[in-house]
Amino acid sequence: MFEFDQYLGFLSFLGILTIGFWLMFFLLLFIIPYWLTGTFLEWIKGKTSSKKT
Image 1: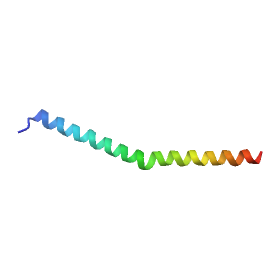
Image 2 (image 1 turned 180 degrees about the vertical axis):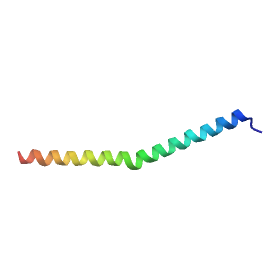
Image 3 (image 1 turned 120 degrees about the vertical axis):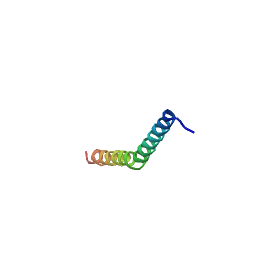
Image 4 (image 1 turned 135 degrees about the vertical axis):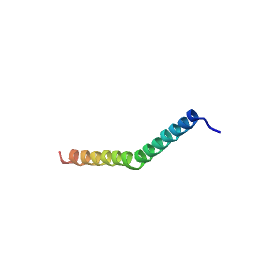
């Protein structure tokens, strides 16, 4: 059915696909909301400090 080279290629494809899936999952659920929250808080801090002066 499959030769050994095709089997290794298929396994490497599945590994790369799985790594890509978990990277996108991590980026969308942790990194991007963290970045947006920090940017928003810095923007609020800048607005309040400019009103004080």
